[in-house]
Length: 315
Image (cartoon, helix red, strand yellow):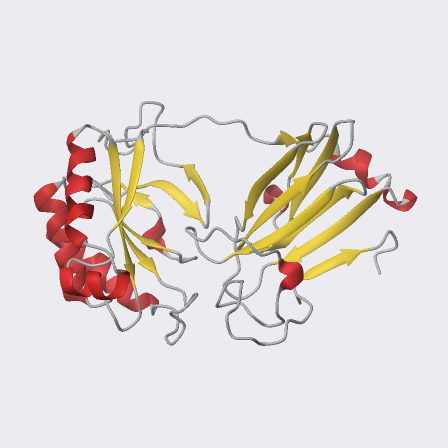
């Protein structure tokens, strides 16, 4: 294991025990241990509305990171959403997160971010020497913009603790036109999902029960053509795969999928970066964009408003 992301809910052991039913001290000791072993460690603090979202609480987290780890350890103040049995408060006000971040930076934390927020400068990485923007993020999308190949700032040459991770991207959309041409035959289905409210990401789970390999295609519904490119996802015989699509541009409207009729597909709304959805949106509720499925309120479930199955004629 190379990377550890540790969520420290609070530096108050009494609060920690009362709310989480766990103990704070083992979490802190384990965090110091993995950092001491030379692993990459990042610390996040879920700031729960009206519970642990004060600037004083943020300063205690920042002070612990600076004292026990390093000023280069990334610290994330993460926005809370109501879920499960904790639904009596709303999402954390963004301005409280911003105040917490400002305090941590003032104390000496070099890389401090806000989590679960969009369209905010605090999600980007900046040079700690000259303040140049080095890495831009939008939702779950990230791209280096101010770094050279060695991970140094292009403006001033300061070296960032940066490691580029290569991974196998989906194949570029060479198969899209082939599937689109088969829409009229009824062998391919087009599905659209629109971003709405706090929903800016989507898990797509596809299963190929057949004996032959197939392709599933997806692309962004986007007024910015440069960000609307399609991707092909190959599925082997009897293969299942789950991937995530995230809003990558302010003008983006949603995601469009082309699915061979033999492919079984489920879509899952993603509320925040740490939310792993387990109930597909076919069981969703109209207008619900603050509390993820499943619901525990006993309310009647109605058709999901953001999903549309489009016929070959577009109706």
